[in-house]
Image (cartoon, rainbow, N blue to C red; front, side, top):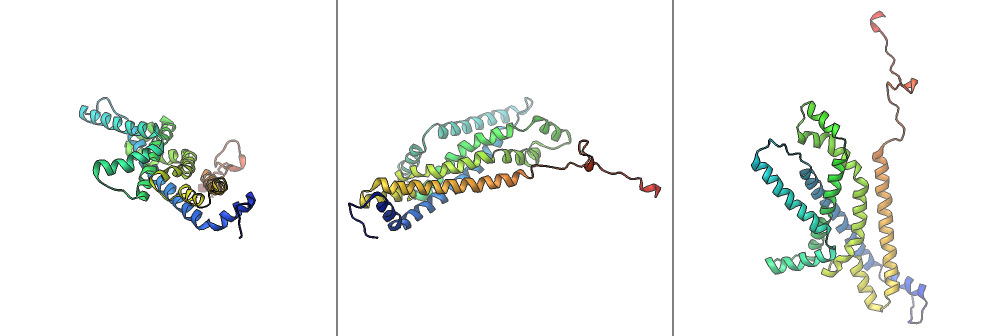
Length: 263
């Protein structure tokens, strides 16, 4: 496609999309890989921290164990507050350059991207998971304990399945946010979509046209991911109408009991 400095706006947009699509595609691929991996690892981190922070402590527990639990809780709370209270772009600079300066370890940009997104997401997911656990009726804890189940058995078999289902929309939202927030990783040289877009824009100095294409790609990615995750949420919800056997309001659902001994 022939292009000149005097070409129209839409001609430039089409030219950039055709000329640099391999660059945009590689950038979008890195963006999706980092955001998906970071969300999964962050969810696991948040799940562990959320469970730890909701462990009930009996006043009769060994004082040493209670003290250790308080120390662990303080450390986890500090982690949550620090990573929720500072921008990811600053965290990227501190982690990437700080590790090299303090420990002499030079992380690859891609690994640093995974690390930063994971620990940042973990801080948000920790509070989301904690809220999901606390949203479950306390009566379920009491009922489980009354039949002899331990706290860990109650959490694993009864509470967490419900809590994870309840927080699925928030987890999906974190994934979408991570797709957009990976753009800040360009400051440490991660070759994600925004980084590739800057490279394309620098070749022609057509920043508006390039970033219009970039904006469209981000919109396509987030819209597609949102629709897929929403579809999964609906599937997990199950049918909207249930037929309850033995229902007193649906005569057709009543159990029919026959005395077989008389036949």
